[in-house]
Image 1 (cartoon, one colour):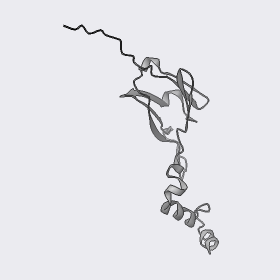
Image 2 (cartoon, helix red, strand yellow):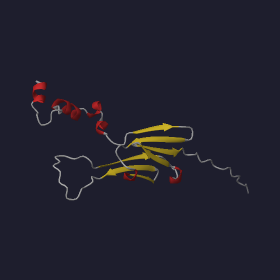
Image 3 (cartoon, helix red, strand yellow):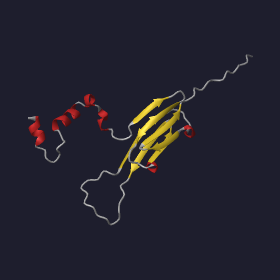
Image 4 (cartoon, helix red, strand yellow):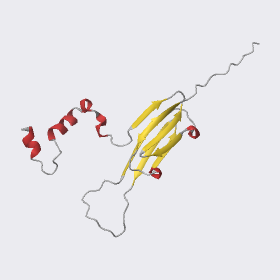
Length: 143
């Protein structure tokens, strides 16, 4: 019966009603983040820094913005569809424009110490580790 109901949907041949229903009823089993398409990130720890590799394929360097505010590194990307004046194409659906953003807690780091490089669809960000603040020893005189 599942196959009969699924195959009757000729407008969306890949749509499976029962699979989608299971995802909606049991999101923790199937994972809430299953729709995460953009900004997949790998973070690697070295002796003195953290190295982030953020996937941002199909973007230009000027489409990506990195900000540091209140200990959070915010990475945002947006790509707008290019419009060609009077040229009319018969598109039914276009997915060339999008925007996405992610924030990562990095602690008390100076923005000058963060290095970023974008190459081949991968944004590489190097964040130095926080150096623990040592309290200097202060002698208190006794009266």
